[in-house]
Image (cartoon, rainbow, N blue to C red):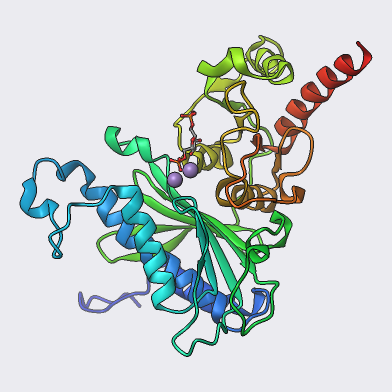
Length: 353
Ligand code: AHG
Ligand code: MN
Ligand code: MN
């Protein structure tokens, strides 16, 4: 029987999209050491990311809205966005007493969070690149936030120590990024695959838009700052020539945004490889192991890809210092294996000579 009453609501055949909040509650028992603490921590990150997102969106207005809006209530000058993002994440996490320590790319040393009772009860430490690709701000191109979460190894109830932060990437319990692009998306893993949540800015709610993200079977995009070609190791130069050769499914396409979070996001969705090798000026590479490479490596592996320093798995590199840099090759498994192959070949030739 058809219903002719216009006020009669028929259920929409499409299921309602799941919000990030619902997802976290529904999957709480899958999280390692489920105590609600990791859920609260991810909640704090999504909240801080909304504040940063709002400011990133205002960036183009800062110069034309004049000094009045440029000065905050304390009469201080407007902060640069990377400093603003850093302060926002640190304040959000410390005010909620959710972690026992934070290390940020923006700060020389890590921060010890003590809790209002002075008890150092929290189980987790966070490492963060608060604004990745910050030079893109000036040109209205995407930027990101990259984060990495570990369970502390020092005893609960004591202040966290450097060893809580210097853990290899394979000890991460969660990792992710927020990409402030044409839309804002938070992509993260807790070790059970990778999921992406797009922010509806009108409602301030993130919705599950990219469930169970996986690299496509094959990739055909390579992403590197090719201006530095002359300073790359021979194995990387050989791989680039291979990418450009007209043969089979090659030449590959070249794309470079200059923000790891954005370049990785494209590789994950379209299939490809991101490369930041050592150069003669930066003999250990440019990217930071703890704030950039480890979290992106965990996401890559969880999505069926690989991440390497050219010779070994990134997540097995034992960190020795907070701001350590490493060469970084990450993306479709086959593409990462190919570049490792070219690097190994030049090593063998050198060893023979
Ligand atoms: P950050 O803005 O956090 O310093 O990071 C920028 C990084 C990374 O996101 C990007 O892939 C790389 O630097 C770009 O470096 P080049 O300008 O040397 O290509
Ligand atoms: Mn960065
Ligand atoms: Mn940064």
